[in-house]
Amino acid sequence: MKNLLRKAVLFIFLIVAFNSCNDDDIPSGKGAVTIKITDAPFPFKFVKKANIGIEKVELKDAKGDYVVIFEGNSNFNMIDLTNGSTKTVAQTNIEKGTYSEARITLNTASVQLSNGTNYELNADAQGSYTYSINPAFIVEEGNSSKILFDLDVNESFRFQGSWFGQWIHDITHITGCDFQPEFRICDLDQTGSIQGKVTKNGSPAEYIYVYITVNGRKIATHTKADGSYKFIGIKEGNYTVTVKTETDGSTSVSNIRVKGTGTATCTLEL
Image 1 (spheres, helix red, strand yellow):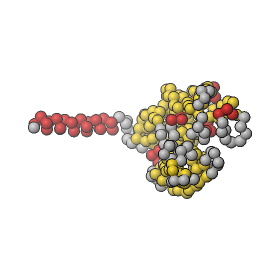
Image 2 (image 1 turned 180 degrees about the vertical axis):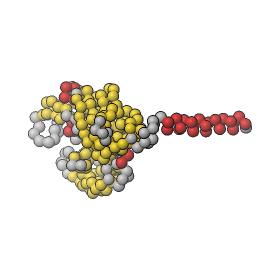
Image 3 (image 1 turned 90 degrees about the vertical axis):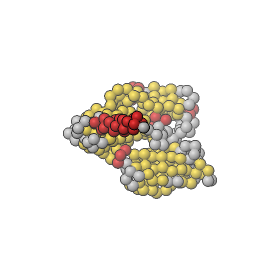
């Protein structure tokens, strides 16, 4: 019995010590930052991979200086990161404060179509790109924060083709691709989300184009097999959720409000 008691006390001590060490990992005057990446996807099915390589991420502090929060070589297939799915780019500690601008440096980009065609876009991708952070990113002393980099894949990978109009419906129409990254960056700890399902004739509707407008820009996704969709990093406010089919162009809309860091639910019927 005494041995069991000693083991229990030791176990509790180790848990407390472990948590204390975690807290002590954040230096005085700094906060822990996690960089998350996600994407707003293509409005068509025939893109298999859309890869980017991140070389550096920097945040602009109140003094106007850029602080490096990631430096290395991380590669991501952005097609995998839809409907609220994210991947972690890096975790680090930086000075407490408010950061309203970010600079991201890329070194590679490529896209692969479902028929095996590849477009290497490294020459287009290489360089540094600056974006405002909305809402601004707040780092508090001793606390952990998450910043989201949301790549608009549809606007970033720009296909050329023989199809006249906004939509390219057939893979055979594609003749080339350019790359110009478009990111939306926000503080995940100050924003909420929108999620829901799309149905058609009472059944889940897969691969339906769903979008909202944030700060004058369209943020889009596609429904999954069960008809579900999700937007993350959405600041408080009123939004119109619109769904649109690519086959006949039929639409359905609904107004919804995001409150603080909460999740608003919106179900639509086509």
